[in-house]
Length: 193
Image 1 (cartoon, rainbow, N blue to C red):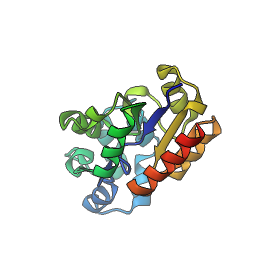
Image 2 (spheres, rainbow, N blue to C red):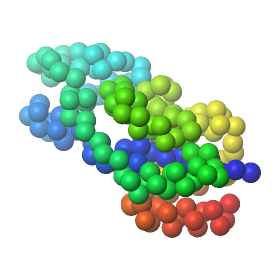
Image 3 (cartoon, one colour):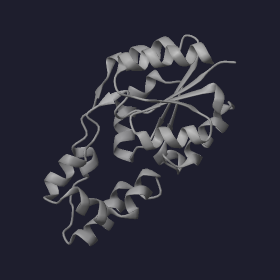
Image 4 (cartoon, helix red, strand yellow):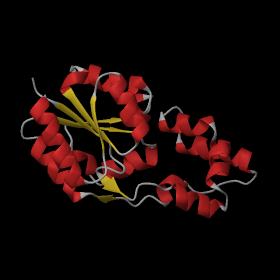
């Protein structure tokens, strides 16, 4: 049985994807204040339940000032992690490799426009799926679409909470730190699968 590899995008395949520091600096508020003002709308935005325009409209009402620009896109300037990209290409020679990512519309569109998702066999994006990590349904959705069992799957993410949730349903999971360590850990998994 072939192995399915699920790679997170931001922090694993790409660097410089966290726009929150720039957004809170631009808005001159703390991260805690931003998260409070964003509230449940941030999760809805990640799940594709509301648009970027809806998010900023709702945020502005709580913020007390109108946010005129789409800030998630304004500050988004990722770069590819070539070591991870090279590993994905090697894995694709004998396995299926997909992207499983929490993302918002502006970031998803950026990666589509720059063809960064082209390295994958398929892309499973939270804003298109209607569910985001660490919700167990995020992983179940991918496994169902791919027609594969959790024990034949390896998930790579840079957020421990996401790794723990994937492990709860039996997915082999690797907490990403760097490409060289990832290469070694995947080899270890491959020897056991």
